[in-house]
Every structure is written in structure tokens, then in C-alpha cells.
Length: 72
Image 1 (cartoon, helix red, strand yellow):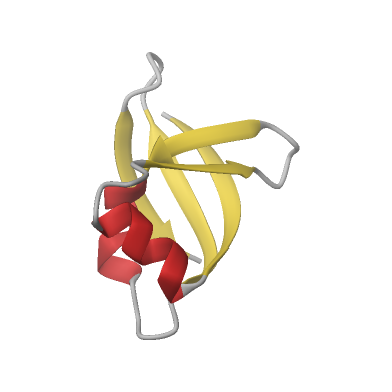
Image 2 (cartoon, one colour; image 1 turned 135 degrees about the vertical axis):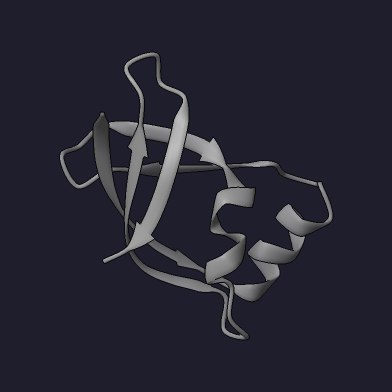
């Protein structure tokens, strides 16, 4: 199992674009400098009125398939 750690600061208006389907993926840089793209839907349980904010560990298998996400 592989993992990446990302820091996310997504405003509510950015989240609405994802929710409406205007955008579907989140593009960011992991703490170790890798460029990361993942489906926004994996962040849905972390959405609050002020958007999505925090540090997250994303776990994925050896083929790059998403396994789980947790807030750090």
C-alpha cells in the first residue's frame, strides 16, 4: 500500500464547481513534491461550510487505485 500526504485549502465556491460537475478532479502537490490528481468525490465527507481544509493521507494500491483517505 502506497500513500501520499496532501494539504488542501478549498473554498466553498471551488467545491460547488466540483459538486456541480464543472470540474471532477483535484490537482495539487503532495508534501514530497509529487504532482497529484484525484477524484474530488473522495473529499466529500470532509466538506464543511467553509470548504475543505486540512492535511490528508491518501492510500492507494500498487496500480495507483484509490483505497482510502483520512484527515491527519
